[in-house]
Picture 1 (cartoon, each protein chain N blue to C red):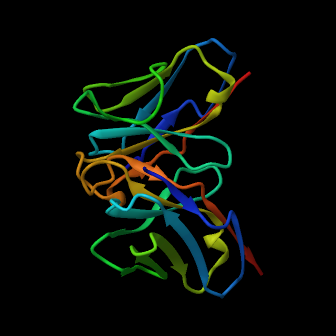
Picture 2: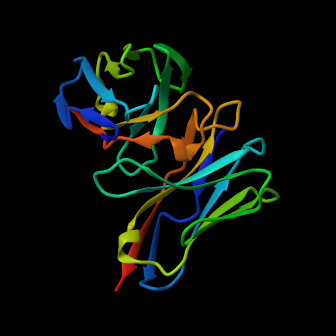
Length: 115
Length: 115
């Protein structure tokens, strides 16, 4: 069925280090995945997405890795900054097509940065 | 250029009452999706409106209904409120139904508390 979950609810990282946030999904038919960042008092903000025909995609300071064999997704943030403190959600497309028309969110990982 | 706006910001109701939440999409957007986010959880898809029609629906009872107006703004109505309806209600707007996550913008949400 449609299910997206995260391995850890909280992650504490030293400023300047790299952060890795992991996510598992259960629907092997899922073909589109999105990472969101949600700061306190705000709605989710798109970070990066990846389609199932890719294993890796890079953005500015962020990389998403997709392992379809074990149904695992990860978000890597390089040189973590205080502004990266937020809750991060992985999400999958729950509609029939590869669009963001129905997004299934996981429960989130809170990233905190140590000075 | 205004982003997605939602009103009211906060709302307190009692069990059994009815509530209407409002959303104005980002300029140029014609599709509105609604999500419910319980405290500490990821957002859950309620439904999506396009061309004034409900296009997709998540696993929510009929107490949750919506409407989209010709100017693309949208309302979410919840009848017979339950304590469990207390949550942050998020509106997201996009163009059409086929866009990716990078084309969908979330508003700041309406915090509903049911007493």
